Image (cartoon, rainbow, N blue to C red; front, side, top):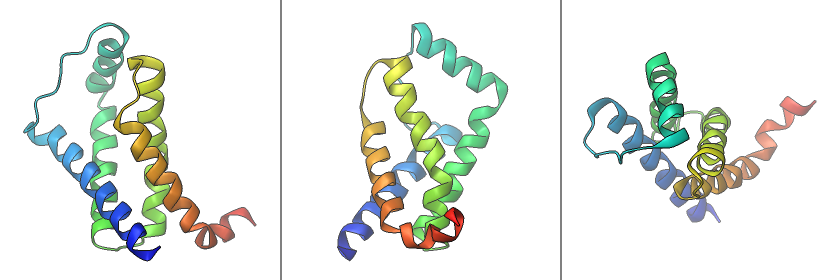
Length: 121
């Protein structure tokens, strides 16, 4: 089970590292959006909200890669993963990498559930 946790952790961290760096460096071309998706992403982009989200993604990815407070990192990124899947389902009308990311995130939160025991007391 430990090897599975390591694979998920590094895969998850690489996904978030690549996409957060892409936001700042634009090395992967993004597809054209239309309709509600374009409107939603336009509002997020002009408000500066995406900059904050991408910084959080970058910091969490580095925390996971360098094994710095991993249980905390998994909780910090959970709202971002939730928003990705909600965007895909309710606005874009597709399910893609968001489902994979969300399942990995939930699995790892479950794996660290004993570390979060103090939160629930």
